[in-house]
Image (cartoon, rainbow, N blue to C red; front, top):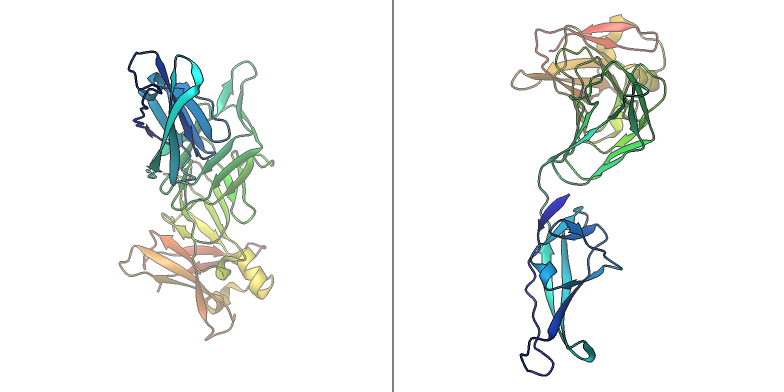
Length: 334
């Protein structure tokens, strides 16, 4: 949301050209987009069909709040002078006011509500949307990590670019299935908490989170001290961009390739032949590695990048899960 002072300088000549002080000035602003709210010194004003009529006194404390959906628009400002309450002799002038809404980077925090009577934490039916570049949506569980969480019907969506979902203040493990677009705000429950889509970055909790079916250009950062579970979607090779795990811990964490490899080559894998269909190469600079998949599945085939693993060096060993039988292979960055 973007809130700023709206300056409207409006005046009109008295209809009889006599400055006798008995003329009232009414100002009508029209052309307001649906995502705009006006208030007068903190008092919300009623907008009807994109139009609102104000007194001259209301102009001094006028502010406009926009959802950023319409970033550039023109407002028609009509000032009408009514002499002694006689509308028949009213005189009006209209001018155009151009408005530019400049998106800014900000953080919006949404907290779960604690029900002390039933000792339950509620996070239900939230519709959280952002279309602002650089916007961060932060979820917090109100400092009640041990109580039962009641969470369902939530929609957590981003439709701009560069938005971040920050779960670092959520004090229980979560599970996000990026392919299905679902989120469980308590990974120990079986019921989804709602839908999720569109975020460029996700910051995990300090618990052991599940980031399933990673695909596209999403960037995931696990919480400090957590041992997270990461898996790649079967469709990961179909995208022009690939996911990034910014702080992959090669000592304690593994990456699950079973959905991807089962789809490409069928179930059942021989870890001795892992190098035929998956490889890891250290990136320039030595601070990350790229995991690639052999789309042919045979020696000499074409390897296509599937994920970036931040924090992986040439001296590390990465454990990869090759199939749904949890056959593992040890990958050594070249």
